[in-house]
Length: 391
Ligand SMILES: [Zn+2]
Image (cartoon, helix red, strand yellow):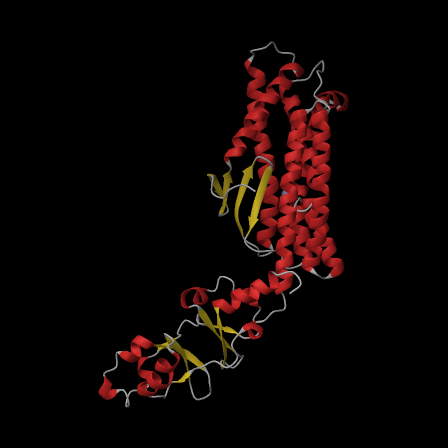
């Protein structure tokens, strides 16, 4: 997949439109290839400028049609409440990056099909305008990139845009996940089975199958004298295979930790200090005994209030430690970032800020009562166990 953040071209409704450097190579190839074709279709002598000009315009129109396809995905996605961080064009087409996965098979289907619908409209428009202006027979000549008696530059360009968009449509509808057709297949499998992970796995396996087919055809083309197409198709097959395998690994991971709750992993008898305990008691019975740098603080009902740190307790002068309480020195969790619900999925802890900063996060029940403490080590161990086959 393309590297994020290459060259930013512009923004469309807050979506960053960027191109990968490999995209310029594709534009160059297209211009080179098309100027040759246009030269022969228009029957212009070598060195004439017109075919090059047409080729450059065509390459830009190709760029626009890929971008419109991706914007089709993006707009439907945003309307369904799923953000799009950026659209990047690279060697093998475009990628619209969603900020999260679809939440239902219906949403997945609509987002996946939106791109091909846009491409279909472009192909129909180019074909329709071409036939309307030149007649079906002449357009068919141009469509096959053959020299026609009255083929003009505009007609040749229109025909090429039609051809390329019909190809983009056909290619994207191949049910090889993560191509659009594969995402449609995933949405259908998801709807039928009711299980997102199983559907993704099935679609990804199908995608892997297609990747082998692409590679095989690529090799066949390579040895039968069409090395450029062969290498191209082989590379597409390889990249598809990688993406499909990545999706399989990801869903296996997700389905393994699916159903694991914070309560399944946490320490169930958390050592906590009551807010009305004296600082002297906190030091003697907790800090000096356990040697931890901090303790959770609770009220009389075991409700989580915040943390008391060793340094804060130490800072209280000795003569007043018996008369001062933890309430005076602890730090309240005013932002509510130090706790999670004990019935939250383990997955929700990934990227938790307190876990990273403090090495632990408190688990509370629906009434705010402290039920456990979950450490980064425990989360790590749970994830490792989930990842170990057969565990
Ligand atoms: Zn698409």
